[in-house]
Amino acid sequence: MDAKEIIARRVALELRDRTLVNLGIGLPTLVAKFVPKEISVAFQSENGIIGFGAPPPNGMEDPNLTDAGGGFISALPGAASFDSGTSFALIRGGHLDMTVLGGLQVDASGRLANWMVPGKLVPGMGGAMDLVVGAKRVIVAMQHAAKGQAKIVETLTLPPTATRRVSLVVTELAVIEPTPEGLLLRERAPGVSVDEIVANTGAKLLIIGDVPEMPITISDREGAAA
Image 1: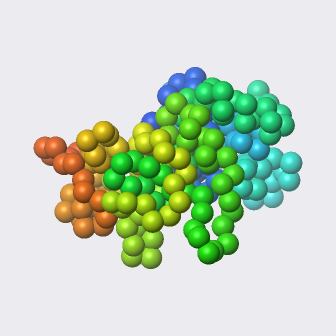
Image 2: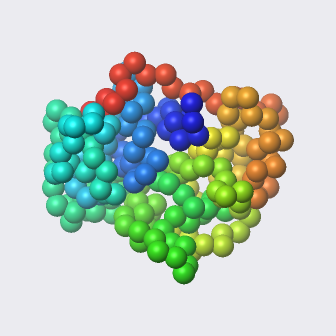
């Protein structure tokens, strides 16, 4: 199981029945493959759809069905499409129960940076700023480090997406909860030690007692959501 799948499977365990959830572009879209079979979730993308599922099989792609990043998605029974103005009204109006976003950095106070690397070509802010401010829960799904550099840092060196503290950070090594007291290490990935997590993290972690291994959802209906 690769790093992205570990992250997506663990994030899927944060889904709750009968909720409206935004999946950001890239890694977060993989979460749609691992919805626990006992729950029903409506996935939203800011380009204007509610009720999408995992990417279709090769050869079944529809150019009219894409996520905000242009990746192919499937539309499930009951899905609805609408203009981006309506989509952002849902986001800015506080109607999203949760958003899952990729990240470039998260700092010790729980602030996210995910929209710009100064001096480099980047996609731009998209809906990230609105999502971090408007969703009830904000989960960051990202790899723990990039090119040997920690992505969880004491202080952001990239422009922040918003001033709000995110709800949870899930990486292939750990589940970390930003709190008013600091970054709490809640879970470690199977086979990963606390010392390894600390060594790969650029910010101080709060460690209370024994840190349990993270569960990883096993779904027999991969690709399903509602």
